[in-house]
Length: 325
Ligand SMILES: NC(=O)c1ccc[n+]([C@@H]2O[C@H](COP(=O)([O-])OP(=O)(O)OC[C@H]3O[C@@H](n4cnc5c(N)ncnc54)[C@H](OP(=O)(O)O)[C@@H]3O)[C@@H](O)[C@H]2O)c1
Image (cartoon, rainbow, N blue to C red; front, side):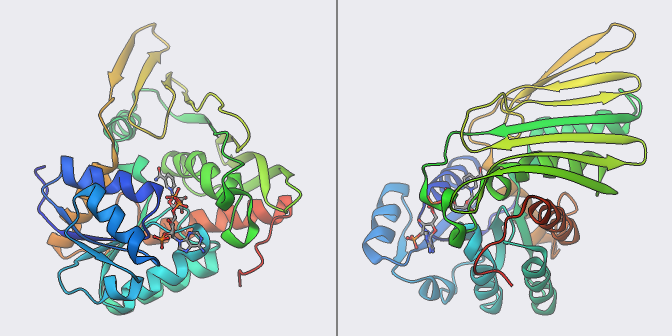
């Protein structure tokens, strides 16, 4: 609520767009001024439900609206590249859903276009902005658990039946949709790994149903798992030379964690707040008002590196999308 106001336009009237609209409307000073859908009736129904004043029957019409400052790209991963480029070309700032694009080559193109146009762009990895994640970063930085030697994180949801999850044309699979959370979490703490080992179990359509990964660092390892066939524990564990952090289910959403130090002391942080998308929305508003073109909490080079990691995992497990280049 203390962040400055911006005017949001939503591109794609789907499931997650509802959550962002709710967060912006209820928990920030900003407003959602318009929604664009490929289907006018769908846009209108979404607008009526979310209390948004203007509904457009095409993405182009949304992007032509001068009252829209920043566009939330909420389409499937397969279309983030195309839709982010459209928004940037229209001179709009962009918050683009995860996974940022299908692959690193597409991510580099989006970043180059954003830099050429001078607009703000950020991947919508909302976890980075949550209160408990800020607290975890701070306590690691002040040495409370010593040197981090181990990160374990897991994300499994039983969503394989959803069309965009099993269709390779929509860049389906567990990795880009769910695995991106443990990967981005490990990256946040340990950075880009020196080596990656991945094993995957593929569906008949060619997308990954389940992936297990080990990331090697000079003095640490991360072990990360994801599946789209089961609701797994969705916890994260960080092991340090002086103590450990246990982040509760669901580690990537607002939650609590417990720190246990080698000396036996233990404390719990409660970061359970409603929705959670308001924190990334507030960061976007702050950066735009400051004239920044990216956020230090998740830079564009970091989003490219995360896509490079997922490219490497996909090459090891044998997943390619039909429309990527
Ligand atoms: N941050 C999070 O917690 C979170 C959670 C879930 C999903 N997501 C991300 O958000 C994105 C959308 O996920 P979602 O669950 O909201 O999906 P969804 O409900 O299927 O909505 C996606 C929207 O994209 C638009 N679209 C454009 N081209 C499409 C095509 N060829 N096929 C299908 N839809 C198309 C559609 O909007 P119109 O019909 O209105 O044009 C559709 O409603 C994904 O990248 C996903 O990873 C993020």
